[in-house]
Amino acid sequence: MGTLNHFSFGWLTPVLSYAMACVGAALGLRCTLRGLAATGATRRNWLLTAAAAIGSGIWTMHFVAMFGFAVDGTELRYNVPLTVLSLLVAVLVTGLGLTVVCYGRHRGLSLLGGGVTTGVGVAAMHYLGMAAVRMHGGLRYDAGTVALSVLVAVGAATAALWAAVTVRNVYAAAVASLGMGLAVSCMHYIGMAAVHVQLDPARTGLGGVSPMEFVFPLAVGLGSFLFLASAFVALSPTAQERAGDLAAGEPGVGEFPVPAAAPADDMPADPYGVDPYRHDPYGHDRAA
Image 1 (tube, rainbow, N blue to C red):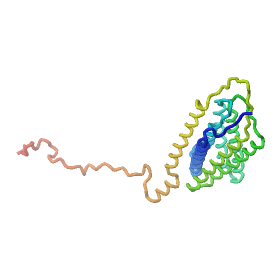
Image 2 (cartoon, one colour; image 1 turned 135 degrees about the horizontal axis):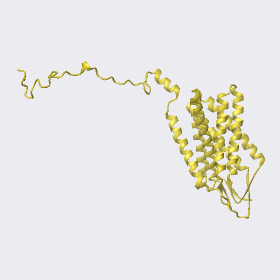
Image 3 (tube, rainbow, N blue to C red; image 1 turned 30 degrees about the horizontal axis):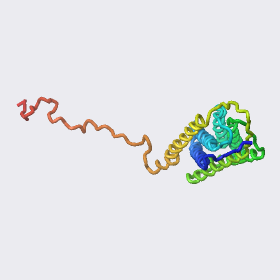
Image 4 (cartoon, rainbow, N blue to C red; image 1 turned 60 degrees about the vertical axis):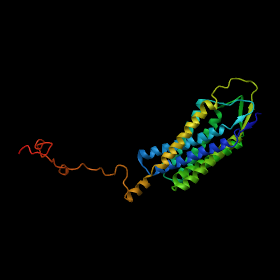
């Protein structure tokens, strides 16, 4: 039995992973709010952005936390296709849940359906990410703890979707994103508590890539996307804010008056008339 260490870097990885989950949740809430205030293709685009934000935040949280995961006696590597698939699953199921909630006619049933779908998908992302791990041994899971992690994922997803379509105040959204990040982090570590490792004495090739070769650059790239997109969306005004500016008489973009060209009548007259040679440089009248 391999000895597991979930905090090989101390509190650095849990804190960073929690921050990633919170940033993704905050950006997703903000984008969902924009989508609910829009219609047509604009709503669809905002919801796609929200799904990418929340899904990327959950995935980044998982793999940043996995940097602190170590097993004594074996190296850890990752299968690239399964790792990428886990990211796609996180984004797709989040998008599906947002679509069900935002376009559903019955709020309660939509929240339940979207929460279950998204929660099971987030759990699938977690365990796909674990299936991508390559080590000199095998992973076993405690069934009861796995079931508990799935229930936590469903509860967290339902709460996240409820907040996405209900919360309107910026401060309330910030509190909701902190709660969502905590719920996702709890789900991850409950799932990791279900893991048991049986080491294999036969040292065969592991395959895959090391975390620093692939997972770390991808996590840094997604984290940078989340922070930059959060700053952009937070600084850009909402439709209500733009409407408030217009009601207050402040011109919006494209509404500033353009100064017109001065009319020809306002042009100063030629002091010499139409004939520039009427006067010489010394003020003598040539006609005289």
